[in-house]
Image (cartoon, rainbow, N blue to C red; front, side):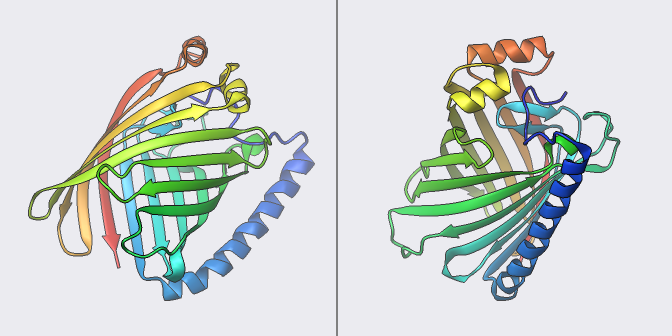
Length: 269
């Protein structure tokens, strides 16, 4: 199943699409060059690989067959960070792109304001660049976001996301989460997130008005094999909340409510 609405800016001509890809490739090269000093001085680096039964994106089930989703997260001094995340379709289900092909790469640079260990909240600002290698007409988008997370029970958070390609495209995401130590080396994590999307987003995706778009629930069980390496299992549930959005997904023969799961592994150094 594909997306209901567009996930990136349209390329009106093949020439324009090629030029856009060349420009974005140079941006990636520059971003990688800037990230090297962060890697060298990084306090923490985590490499994760998840194999999931589906790819869920903001309430939409992009691919309802298995995917591989690796990630590299770098936490550098002074609150700076960098993240690289990808999605590989393990079958030819999504848009007939073929099995074992990358459908998305996300490059994120972020900064968490240094406020001390006893600060009541964490405040983070970030920019994200999205690349869709298999889709010429949706290759590239830019998001900015600001996030405030409480350092207390359930870690409540609010994140405001804005797309630079669409001046009126805003989303607000409200989340909670908590981890429980069950026994030595075994941890249970629970999380929930609900999103309110404004008119531009809802209209482009579903032809709907502003409203609460989706809710997502997650549970993960992690076992620490060593101090650096952990493996685990994850289960998630996603559901569209807006009635018009659900009707649009019905017409596209998509999923309004979906349960997915998979296995995870993380190595930190």
